[in-house]
Image (cartoon, rainbow, N blue to C red; front, side, top):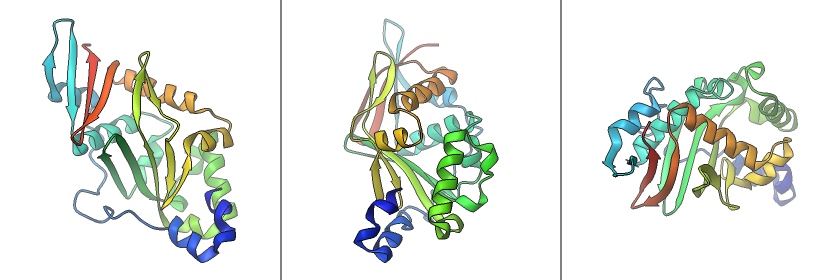
Length: 215
């Protein structure tokens, strides 16, 4: 879908951008972290303050947040197959935005193990651009997260990234019969399953700082 929107600007240029791999890929630390580390354990080990009202303040740097994201994905049956076939995974924090994503090869992913929207997305991409299906590509999510009424939310600038191409998350979600709100609810539910009830969140000095109700 992303490539189709820019084919008129030059197929070779579009192809090079879509298949571009991030600078971190292949560098030390780009491997997928051990998914056996639980998110709740990460929260417990990074809780720096307990308020009188029972709130925990937790601080994650990039490496710790990367570990937490991988661990959360591994505990979601619909998303775990992607992680199982990821060749690299990275999470970065810059200013007030977080980007997390993986390098994978679509031809190595068992399509039948994905939820219906995921199957549709992979098959459509492979049918439209068959050369992409056998190459390593980067797929990521970038946005400014916030907490609204206990729910994780992304602002209207949230993006899905394929290589160096970016497309609004809202557009991607509607394309495959979802809404951004549904996606955010799924992320919130995934955190809740890990024993995390978010109360407040901010990004400061390259760190994610959030308050969570003590479990």
